[in-house]
Image (cartoon, rainbow, N blue to C red; front, side, top):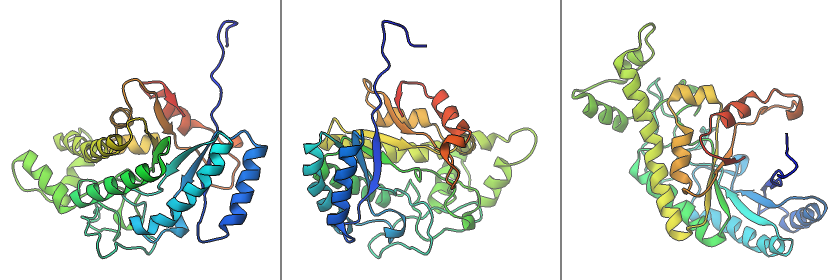
Length: 302
């Protein structure tokens, strides 16, 4: 309960918005400005080349019209005192849905426990993908100077398509790294059988989960270093997923957010928000969001 001597901090309301520069941009601009005038929105988070507008990992060239449109809109946003943030929509890439790598994108792909890749999702340990995502995010940071960059929830090792099975990366590079830790060669089948064995956990389970956690944190450090070199004030936000799912995968959102958040800052996070259905969120049990928030180790802007 609020005491008589303290006040709750004000809400900062963010509109998550996709503006297609190739489809009725002038009319959409008019509608957006009218909405801003009639609402209490403090910030617009622009999605870039999302879902059906995506043909795969975006190139800087493909992103330029979106960047130019946002720069045009920022003049109007500034007039209304509204901030700009960005959600590039994809990092490793959620799932293929018929898409594939472009000829110049020679990324090492993520392989599921089935031994199958989906043709587009990159292994986070891939040096070429790490360089690509850093270059792309830095380009967006430099051109738009957003107040925050939101990292999509595809910064994960699971749920990249049914053909890959449950999750985890079993590409040749990840297998080699794990084999070096063990001191002998290892196969995907051996890892899967030992990690998921019933009863007393096999010693490999903990080591494999630690490897998976490092697989996600290593590129996070590289990305943060690159972006903060361009803009030391930019915040990096995280779109999290379902708590029991990411805990099974061995992810540590606090550790990841510590990488992306300066010591004097609060975390910036969007917990998984059910439902991804037609059911109204107000009538849906918010257990996923509450579990995530309850486990955060620092103050957070949510």
